[in-house]
Amino acid sequence: MRFWNYKIAGVAFLIFLGCAPGASFSQSKRDKSVWRYDGGLLFETDGALPNGVCFRVSGNATSPEFFENLKRIDDGHGTAFRRGVETVTQFPDQLLLSFVIHDQSCSPGLHQVGTRPYLTREMMSALQLSLYWKRGVDLRQVKNIKEVGASVEPIVPYATALAAELPQRFEWSYQLLVPSAGVPLTDSLVFVFRTAEGRIAARVAARL
Image (cartoon, rainbow, N blue to C red; front, top):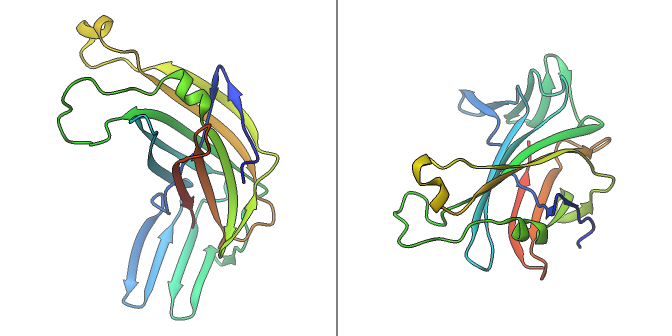
């Protein structure tokens, strides 16, 4: 199912996403709930490599003015997406995905005994991205994805005095334009990280 591999500055990447965590929620009645998407969709997920390295992907999906005042309303009649009095049924022509990737402890909040492995440029260059639109159980490959920005920046350790003795860590940032014209808002966007051997390192779906 892999259809798109990309390498930049010695790094290939995969992607992310959480299930509507970027929406704010309110419930005015027992049988009615409203999700608001001002500012777009925020997303976050964790992944792991076979060598014991764990990582986190976080970011957002936006489109000029599309998510402003956009609401999802769930009631006894079903689910509807509205912007004011307008009913919205499809995504805009394209979405801008902005996200960052960095390593993290595989057991957040627990004290790490000994030296843990860190995400390196070589590990990132081996990762591959697969991106799909999902409707029910049907997966459709997303094509013509365009990268509009990418960078790799070192992470400055808290203990700056010990920086020379600590392994160097990095944060990878990406911006992608994803075609979404004609895609119903009820479809979800699925992201899959795979290793060079085809093993899934992380998988998550973004949905409104």
